[in-house]
Amino acid sequence: MILIILTFLAAFLLSGIAAYYSVIGLALIFSGAFWPVIIMGSTLEFAKLITASWLYNNWQKTNILLKSYLTTAVVILMFITSMGIFGFLAKSHIDSTLESGVNTVELKTLSQQQKIAEQRLDYLLKRAGNPETASASIDRQIQSTQRELAEINKKRLPLLKEENKLVADVGPIKYVADVFFGAGDGALDKAVRLVIFMIMLVFDPLAVLLLIAGNISYREKYGNKISISVSVPKSTKRRRKTIQAVKESANNTVEIPKENLVTIEEATEPANKKRGFPRRQTDRISKYDEAAELAFKEKKD
Image 1 (cartoon, rainbow, N blue to C red):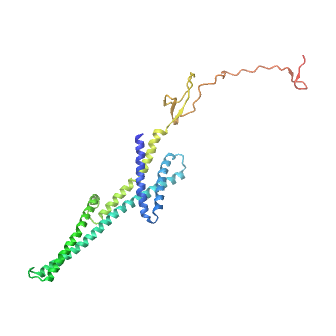
Image 2 (cartoon, helix red, strand yellow):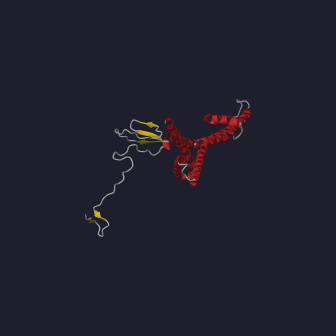
Image 3 (cartoon, rainbow, N blue to C red):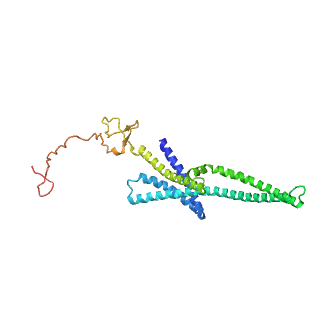
C-alpha cells in the first residue's frame, strides 16, 4: 500500500513540476497572451493525466475510434509539455548567456582602452626622455594617461569578479561540452541542448507512465476482489455454500475473487414447504345436478 501511495505521489509531483515548466515555457513563447496561455496549458495538463488514467481503466470496453483518438491526444500533449519544458530551460540558459556576453563585451572594450592608454603612455615617456628635463605639457599628459589607466583598472575589477562567477556557474556544463564536443566554439550551446533533450525525454513521459503504473498496482491489489456481507441465522444448522471462499472474517464478511463469483443458492428452505410429490386431488362429489337444464339445481333422491 505504501509503494502504491509513493508511486502516485511521485507521478503527481513530476506532473505538477512538468506542468509548471511547460506552462511558463509556452507563455514565454506566446508572450502576447500570457494568462490565456497559462490557463490553457494548465487545463490541458490536468486533462492529460485524467485521460491517461481513464484509458488504462477502460481500455477493454472502449471502442477503437475513441481509444485511438485519446491515445493520440495524450501523446501529442506529452510532446507539447516537453516542448514547453525545452522553452523554459532554453530561456534560462539564454538569459545567463546574454549576461555573460554583455560582461565579456565590456571587458573587451576596457581591455582595448587600456591597451591604447598604455601605448600612449609609452610614447609620452619616450618623448619626455629624462623626467627632470621634460616639459610641463608632456608631464601633464603622462599624469592624465596614468589616471586613465587607473580608472580603467578600477572598472575592470568588478567585471572580472562577475566573469569568474559566471565561469564557475557554467563549469559543470562546460566539462560536459569538453567531453562530448571538445573545446571549440559553440560546444557549450551544444552541450546545453543535449542536456535539455535528455530532460525532455524522461520528465513528462515518466510522470504519465508512473500514473499508469500506480493504476496497475492498485488494480492488482484491490481490483480482483469484492466484499459481500452474508447474514447467517444462529438457529440454522445448515450453512450456506460458497465456491472458493477466500477469507471469512468475524463480522460474516466473505471476500470472493471476482472471476469466481457465482450465484449463491440458499441452503435454508421455508419451514412450511412440503417435500415429495404433490398429492393427487380426490374426485369431489357435488350435490348439484350439473347435467340438469337449470344450473345449480339440487338432485332428487
